[in-house]
Length: 117
Image (cartoon, rainbow, N blue to C red; front, side, top):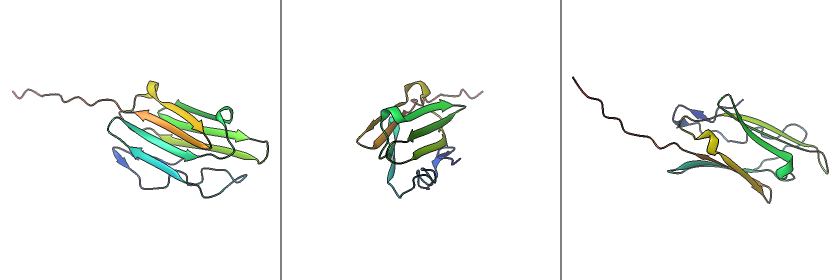
C-alpha cells in the first residue's frame, strides 16, 4: 500500500506506481490537484468503464479496484490513506473516456480562540 498523504504533507511519488497488476501494465499519466475546497485525483484507466471500477472508503482508506476480462485481462487495485479533513460522505467519482476522476472535498477549518488565564 502506498501512502498518498503523510500528515498534511503530500508525498512526491507517482500516484500510479504499480497501479496496474502484472496482467496489464503500461506507463500512464496521473494527476493530483490540491485546490482550496477539494483534492482531485485523476487517473488514466483505458479499457475500464463505470461498471468495471469500484471506489470505496474503508478504515480511512481510499480503495480503487477495477477489472475487465473482455479484450485484455485488466485488473487494478490501489489503496491510499485519506488525508485528514476530507468529507468522506461527499467524495465523488466519475469515469469518462478512459479517465477516472475522484473528488475529495475538504472540511472547512475553523479558527478557535483559546482564552489565556
